[in-house]
Length: 384
Image (cartoon, rainbow, N blue to C red):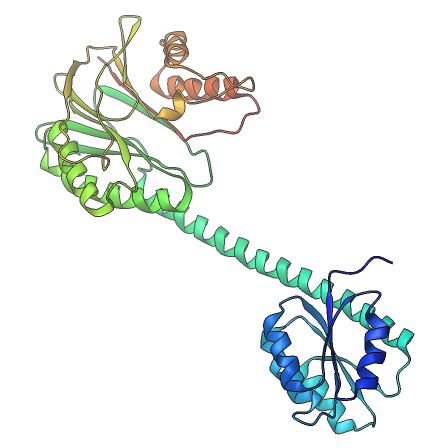
């Protein structure tokens, strides 16, 4: 029979009993032995793989119950067996209630019976350990599920419930997180005088709960600045300075920021590490080349601006990098050229259908591949 990896500690102040116990277990288990309670406690402290403790009740320095009580914290899952030369109901109950004793065996014992008792106790121990692991995992998952729900609530709070109603314009959003909680975010703000629309699309580094919390902080800062009507490049520089002071580059945010005059269709774009926007005009599509460094990566960063004009019928499309980071089952990337071609195929559709179909084609391209990044697509079209 192969030797078990589990160790048995035997404790008895009579050498003959120790030898008999050793002969009982030595061919089946690794055996440690001690002749006093204090000596046995040192072994318990030294070895963390003791699975069974067999202890005599009457020992000169401490009783078996006193010794076993000391082992409870050190070896909580050990199988404890008391050996005694007499039967005392009070001692028996104390052993069971205070020391988690598995069995109480009266001397002289029968070695095969004792071995069978130990093996039965070990099976119970293994089951108890498995149950403990399962219980802890269940608690961990329940806690994680609650934390994810809190993160989802945070994200539902910071993301607008709907696009604003804009006279002379039509607007739509398609947003899909890659996990339970995404790192993408977007926001709108509308000035009544002059009639100006602000759109922010962001991508927070990381995923899940940390991204949601970081996104909430960033969204709060954006909402504080938007009513001030700061120029887009100046606003990104200000956000960068604020974030890098607080987070020292451990997190970053990629951002596209648009200010659009709703009266004349003139707009200003600034970009901090997001994919370039697309302008759909006169049946053609162009990418607006406006590079920039993500926020909170470098100090003293300046940002360029691109000026655009939306004629009647023109559509501006702002996206996150989930639109061009999709991968098909063969490992091929869904590159910007494919996305541009997709825009052309759906250019005659209204903004809601346009963004829905752009996302649908990304999903079809990915096939059974798990989404690697969040997808946000915003389209705004100027109408007559």
